[in-house]
Length: 243
View 1 (spheres, rainbow, N blue to C red):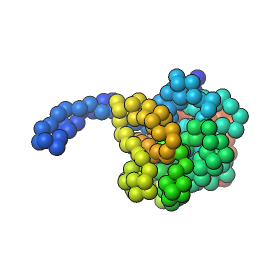
View 2: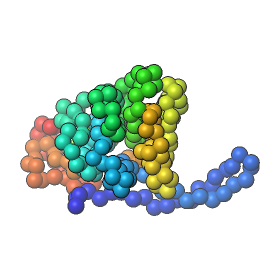
View 3: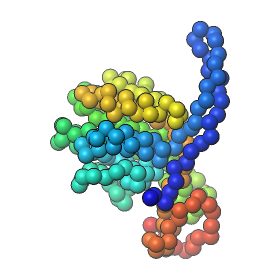
């Protein structure tokens, strides 16, 4: 069992204004990185397609959550820069994986911070019609860096908040189909469409999520058996070099 629990948010009531002038009350629950990846993994397992999937990642909390929560069944199933920390590689990795393995389901699990660095490759994907699946977990932040700055650098924040574009509009500009979801109630059906309805063409899924910490984490100067498992502040050795 994973030591890090998936954050679940309480349902909230909203008033929806329809185009015909009427209103209706709806209930929606916010999402987190771990919850979206867990839903994707569950649907692939239930459909029996997990063995046929190849995943790529950028760098950040989405990378850590993917490593923890995807059920790995095959060798070389995860394409990631690992601790080299190369942001922006997920899109290129996924394109290459699909071209080399045309019968596989190639899914890029990316964060907005990493995706923003290389999304110009959407032009190549759109022109060449490379049938990759692009999952963008958007919390408008560099959450892993922000968490480090909070815990180990006296909350001296710099360059950790993003102003994300409308990724569905961006995809449309390159002739790529897209989906959008920002709540748990609609997530299962949107995820099903993302995984099953676009086998022969590229698709982008913009998932708007909340900011959650990147856990587990090992503080500078600490051994691997002394992981941070709970989101709380504590005393740190400020003389230890960040890893």
